[in-house]
Amino acid sequence: MRAFDDPSVVLTRTRIVERLLDYVRFDTQSDENSDTCPSTAKQLELGRRLVDELKELGLQGVGEDEVTMDENGYVLAELPGTATGRVGLCAHIDTAPAFTGAGVSPQLVESYDGGAIEVGHGVVLDPADTPELADCVGDTIITTDGSTLLGADDKSGIAAIMGALEILLQEPDIPRPTVRVCFNPDEEIGRGADRFPMERFDCPVAFTVDGSFTGEVNVETFSADKAVVTLKGVSVHPGTARGKMVNALTWMGKLLDRLPMGEAPECTDGRQGFYHPIVASGDAAACTLQLIVRDFDTEALEERDRRLERMCAGLMAEEPRLDVKVEITEQYRNMYDVLSGYPEVAQRLEEAVRAAGIEPRLEPIRGGTDGSRLTEMGMPTPNIFAGGVNFHGPSEWISTRVLAQSTCTILNLVQLFAEAE
Ligand SMILES: [Zn+2]
Image (tube, rainbow, N blue to C red; front, side):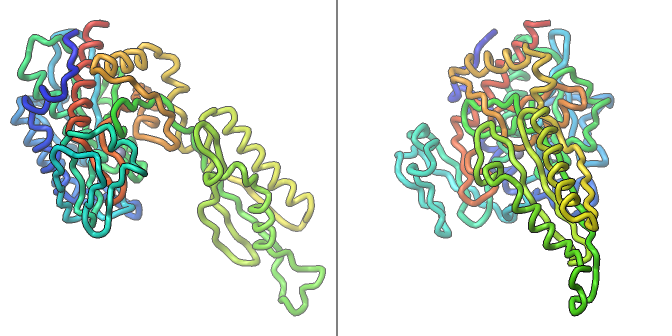
């Protein structure tokens, strides 16, 4: 393998920074209240730009002559390999609904001096609460102007992949399997995998480039279920309710009180799971409580579901006139359940990070990624860092050196898959 471990080489030989600065100016915010795919039409504008850029680079279509974006806003492209095999690289086009992505005006801080950065609009990046900054002294830092998010999540992932493609095209002698690229919409609203063109993409393994700071790799996510608890009481005029009324809201309150407080998101971290009530609605006659249930261990998750069911059965035992139904649906599963069957994937990923001169940090994600669903759908898809920090808000920032390290990691990874064939 020709190890890429010098981010300055990537920064001089590719247009990753220029591309990132261009991509973040597109407003690509997704919308969970929309039923369309993509959820917002504005995501298609960046999609079209990416199709043009991939064509300009000289990439081919996947199952088609030309690079295209499909009707759902998925951009697919292929770089033919020198070795057998195929590996996929994915990044998402949309930005989070949590904060505006309209009118992003990226600011560059060159030769960062290690101090606090006044971003604007009262936003300050302080090394005291953002320890990653201490690792970036001397770097060029890209920030917002304080009024929007930056969108490094995940436009830095797109830029890092584009940079890797640029170098692979400049150096046809670097051994590589066929590389397929997918830029998809709507990751931030949990729908990135919904219409993923799995059959066309057809890669035995892929990577999302959607992680945060340097060295972060994720081969584990939560396993996730949703529970909807419906309580039906007995509705009677309150003036004559004695001994007759069963107030559904009162019993929902009891259920909420019986959820173990130590297993709430606000009381857990690391590898601990939780119950999290998210929506309550209804009235004294009937009401509904929605909860999300999370754990890294899928069996422990299922045990947590059973415990919730037992709590609900307990309410009915105490008040036989109360009717409680629990409906549990699966949301996604820890990708490690599948990835543990492909140990070489995580091994190569760690090796690729080390070859970039970085110590890998394997961090379990307390959430899901497109990769959790894609892995479940049969394509093992761990996640690689793309460089950004403080996602989804105005204090988001990225060091261009770390962005280039993401490209280095991708280049090393691709070569490891060529060697393995
Ligand atoms: Zn992301």
